[in-house]
Image (cartoon, rainbow, N blue to C red; front, side):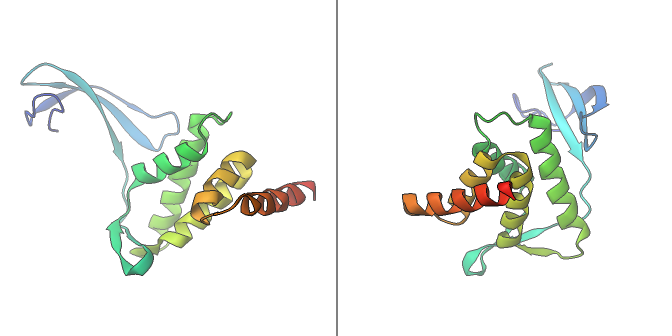
Length: 153
């Protein structure tokens, strides 16, 4: 593993343990060049996934990008970080076990919306506003009204 501080490509693992959600292994490492310590995470990857964006652009699936976008929607909301991590891990697992190598970004967005709907209505509306490209205040009002009506019953 290359050291993020000096670039030396040898490091020694000092400690390994599973993450709280059990989806990864957290490793504390020490660089053999500069002796700096850093942490890496090891996750299971069942297959390489490609995200098909609008206009048929393709890019590799990026778990961190998904985690960041959900984190932005959930910013300053009373949502446990572990819940967000579980949501991202669940989406990634569903995508990897789907048997498809190429996944439409629209499908990922729908999976995120479905997951956020159960976590926090404000984060759900925030994500929807970007995902569905709200352009006016009435778009928010209509969507929030539909969310409120669904919550009532």
